[in-house]
Structure formats: C-alpha cells, structure tokens
Amino acid sequence: MVQYQSHLNAPFTALADATRRGILEHLGRRDASITDLAGTFGMTLTGMKKHIGVLERTGLVTTKKTGRVRTCRLSRRRLDDVAGWIAGYHRMWNARFDRLDQLVEELQSNERGKPRHASE
Amino acid sequence: MVQYQSHLNAPFTALADATRRGILEHLGRRDASITDLAGTFGMTLTGMKKHIGVLERTGLVTTKKTGRVRTCRLSRRRLDDVAGWIAGYHRMWNARFDRLDQLVEELQSNERGKPRHASE
DNA sequence: TTGATACTGAACCATACGGTTCAGTGTATA
DNA sequence: TATACACTGAACCGTATGGTTCAGTATCAA
Image 1 (cartoon, helix red, strand yellow):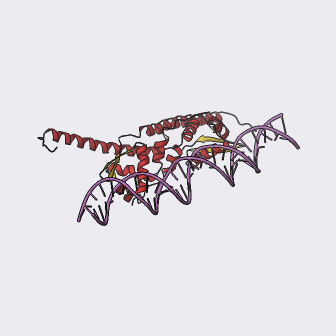
Image 2 (cartoon, rainbow over the protein chains, first blue to last red):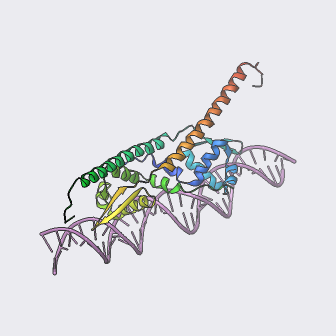
C-alpha cells in the first residue's frame, strides 16, 4: 500500500478556488484591505476574511493590521513546489507517450513486413 | 464586482488530493485496473472508482472496459492551462517584488543623503 | 462623546468530498 | 452449471467548504 506526500494539498486546494486565484492576481497589482477585496469580489467581509485566512495559512498572502484596517499583500512565498510537481509530471508524461508512440510505430512496421494470416 | 474564470477549478481540485496525484504518477509508469489501484492505495474498489471518475471527468485519465476489467491509463490531455496560470502568476510575482525592492532601495539611498530630524 | 467604519468570531446552512458498506450485474473459469 | 471475480450504483457517514447573518470590539472622525 502506497502513502503519498500531502504537503502539496494545501497550495493546490488554495488555487482550486477561482475567487482566491482572483485575489492573488489582484494583490499582484496592489495591496488591498479586506473591505476593498470584499467589494471587488462582491461578497461579505466575513466571507472574504475566510479566503484571506486560507491564503495566509498556505503562506501565499501576508496581512498586517494598522488601526482598524487589515492590509493584505502578496507573500514572498513562491509556488515553486507546485510548479515543480507540474514540471515533473510533464516530464514523466512526455517519456510515457514517447515510449507508447515508439511502440506503435514498431508494431506498424512489423505489420507491413509480415504476410497475412486468415485468422487475423 | 469581478467575476473570475472557473475553468481551472476542476484540474486544480483534481490535483489537490494526494491519492489522485499518486494515481497519476502510478499510471505514468504503467496502465492499471481499478482493482490494482485500489490495492496499491489501500482502499475499496468503490473509493478508487470515485477518484478515477474525478480524473476522467477532468480529462487526465481515460478508461476502457474489456470483459470485466476496466483499464485506466494516462490521458493525452496536458496540464498546459494549469502550468500556464502558474507561470503567469510567477511573472507577475517577480515584477511585483522587483518593483518593491527597487522602491526600498530608493528610499534607503534618499535616507542616507538626508540630514536627521529629531522627530524621526 | 457620539456615530460611523473595519474588522472579528460564533453560529448556521447547503453542498461537496473522501470514504465506507451493501446489494447488485456481468464475465470468466473450473 | 456453479462459483469466483471485477466492477457499479445507491445509500450513508463524518468532515470540510464557501458562503451567510448577527452580535460584538476597536478605531477613527466630527
């Protein structure tokens, strides 16, 4: 039985929501308060606070409260591990299908050079 | 109010589960039946069937039933859109922090050339 | 000091997720 | 023909998610 690493669950889960991806893109342009973001994405403060909580726990966003305003900004944490998984998968995928294509080609060229049987 | 694209939700959600990432890596090595996979990942046939369902609906896996055995294999669908989002985010992230670093540097060099005030 | 603003936390809600059991159906094999 | 095998679907279960409302607390501004 195989046990797989789960440290990628949180970042993938954080990115699985369109609103959260939107928040990250928005914060890439400028810092914003919870109220700003809630307005921009058309939801309650409490709802937005939860999204920010997810992004903060995943390390993708940091926040700082000054007075009554909590300012959210993009964190310096990169998505390198996520990008790394995708890249590794891509490599494996290419190797896999290269091998399959090669196999098909070999079978076809064998087929061409072979006399036909009635049973085939 | 901003509406964001949700076509990336499904692939990110599919990848958010460690078992499903494991299945993809496993299928990268060889095709497998539901029974094989259920054994490998220590869960019931029904549980595994559900994971395969998610991966199949997302287009990451295809299956074919011959006799009583359903064989699962990696699909030719690539994760280009997911990789694309990550790459775009990465670019934006770099631009963002390059600008911030530059700003900090400017402020520091201004500070060095300026006489001190008691209030600072 | 009063009122508006910005957030926070608890509680709730509907739905989805990851898993199970159980009762089938269809297929292979002795 | 009987039995085992591989899967399938429905139903269930506990927990998480994405959102809400409501009732605070703290801070700013007149």
